[in-house]
Amino acid sequence: MLRASPKAQAMNDIEESDYLASYDLRCYDIPMVSVDAALFTFHEDVIKILLVQRQNHPDKGKWGLPGGFVDKHKDRHLEDTVLRKIQEKTGVVPPYIEQLQSFGSANRDKRDWSITICYSALISYQSCAPHISTVADAAWVNLKTVARRALAFDHQSLIAHARERLRQKALYSVVPGYALPEKFTFPELQKLHEALIGKPLQKRSFRRRIEAANLLEDTGEKRSEKGPPAILYRLRKNSAQFTFNRNLEE
Amino acid sequence: MLRASPKAQAMNDIEESDYLASYDLRCYDIPMVSVDAALFTFHEDVIKILLVQRQNHPDKGKWGLPGGFVDKHKDRHLEDTVLRKIQEKTGVVPPYIEQLQSFGSANRDKRDWSITICYSALISYQSCAPHISTVADAAWVNLKTVARRALAFDHQSLIAHARERLRQKALYSVVPGYALPEKFTFPELQKLHEALIGKPLQKRSFRRRIEAANLLEDTGEKRSEKGPPAILYRLRKNSAQFTFNRNLEE
DNA sequence: GTTAATTAGTGTCTTTTAGTCACTAAACTG
DNA sequence: CAGTTTAGTGACTAAAAGACACTAATTAAC
View 1: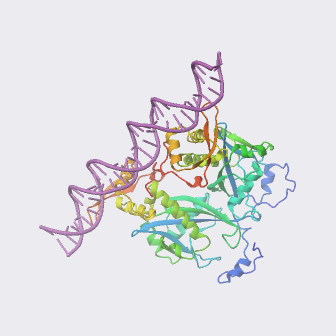
View 2: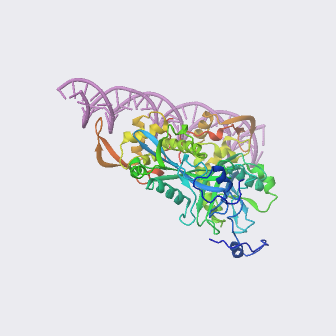
View 3: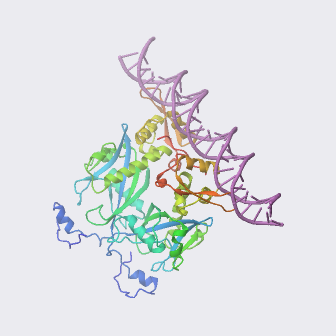
């Protein structure tokens, strides 16, 4: 926007308009700022995270979280930047996204003092499989084994934070459901929560509280595999906002 | 750090060391980044937030949250920046600080696309009263009435977010206790939680769970005002990390 | 002093909600 | 058609918060 060259030297009591006209922050000694996304899904009983291969230095060729820089012209809000980056890699916009945390320090990027605003998002495997299967620089990686890989920057640490937050949400919300297809069964949702929490849950408790809070909508359809047919539900609008007053046992 | 002038033009397969040497991001078209702090305390049954008067344009003369820019030489981590800014205004470092959220958009600062990483912190009134009373550009403001003031930038919104997060913490932790003096009584802590939640709590429930989780340490001292003497406690180390499995009723 | 008002701290019962686990029955498998 | 798997429910137990009365220690009032 306003990028006139400096002219006002005495900045003691100049008019604000004059000040703004002479303002140019871009060449100050400021840190880098980027945005990253930990995008999770659940497929074949495995929680997966989307990794992309870096096309540029530094850490060129290494895998890491999708992310990039704010485009001051394309993006109106921070979230626009992340959604744009996710869409570039998956072809779609995830149904759930939240800001995780910002990480900033002098040494997280070898170039310079650097800050990343990290988001966490969820999407169904099916909705982005078509697009991802066509590209070589984006892939779903098993969350259980991702810790063994050498990732770019501090992305290993960002993933650990994102996983822990998602694990907490599994204890007091139905947010993880956004990692499932639009229609899913109670046992499917429970398996996902169990994978996140790392231990089995009581199906009676799990169902009871979700039904009592009316978070799911019966689609009227059923699906059967090895047992009796299971009812297919979808998440009700605003279910992501609801939090139980009490956590499930850890 | 590395700020040599550009020399490598073809960046296709140059060595990383060459790339780093030619790297200079500072003049790209990037947003501004600042850090702000919502610092709360509790004094005479009132929750207060620290406001400071802006010394520079834009919004010069308006009141807002203490904050500023990362100093790449002074600060190693983001939190160093906030703590430095808080210490400049209060003379002390708060015993509790957490990152709240980052806010970034094209229009939150009239100069340019701008991002702030907002922190929330707690401190006792006593520990910074001496310093604050000597300066004219910093003041505690009643949190109940702060919404009626015209504040700089989007600080009114940052405060609303910080207040809501602190209210939640009052339901499942003893974190608010860091807004009290080192030694405090159970009724004092309860009053603070009640002020945050906005409704009275059952003293039996309040005490029971905190005692069961062993979050407070008996100082051996007592204090009496209008009734029987009350035991003075202090927060145990790591009490801020503890969260109850169940919220108090809202 | 003696009495009243205030309020810290406790005893104990009720309510709510999660944990446990057996049971029914609907589908598929062979 | 018998056996296995598993979706969904009934019903009891356990844990922890809500409710509220009660005791007693201190200050205030006179």
